[in-house]
Length: 331
Image (tube, rainbow, N blue to C red; front, side, top):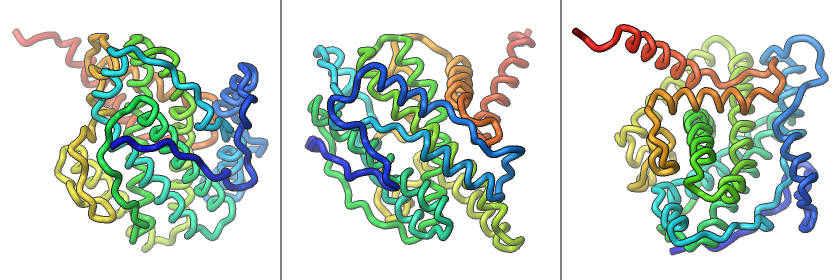
């Protein structure tokens, strides 16, 4: 089946979408620049758990909102070979369903937030995830990409667990997606117009994990000693779950008990051949991911925290690889 093109309700918090006819080049460029660059007017350090930090994060997320409207995206025409490349990417079912689950999880966790700043930011985060799903749904409709029927999206029973799984999963997947996206853009494997269509989506993912990293640090500060220990155990459990998921051992373990699709959950780690005809080594791809990750975060206030796990692991892997390369092959 093919998912039909869908539409969005207005964004929360009084924000507006760009109306049809407003997508002049200058407007698009200004919106893109605003989404990538932001500095807080708060003075001094932004310590997680402080009012200043919470206020800055909430303002960042609201003020970098990009008002592009999915329903007026001008999808480029593709030749048969280009369309075949797009259709054979093993990601479409899982991509559409991931955005559907992420949107619901963000929205339900936002309902639990008593602080209006965090609640508003998470509500907008959920809305943007829904917009990503609309974009993907419109894409598969335009290009006739067949999908399996979507499952019913169930409200998570454990909202915090679902939010943590989604947040950490986005930190992992976005890190590698930044590099794959840059590789696809450099290689010309897909039409530049099609690749550029997803540029706002990629930058939104950067904003999402920036929000998650700062929420996580602030949430930790808000917990007492016993609750903090329990929370850290949950965080470790999430990492174990995500590790199992990525080696195919977590089938049916996700919240809601729905079995995983027989698609490539590790595409963001292994998909370089599917988005480029450039022969790139794993080490070079990791270096590109790190470079793109740093570039996408560079425009935001440096006092805000960035996700650290994937960049740290990648830098460690690159140092180890460099050390082994200096030794040369064994005699």
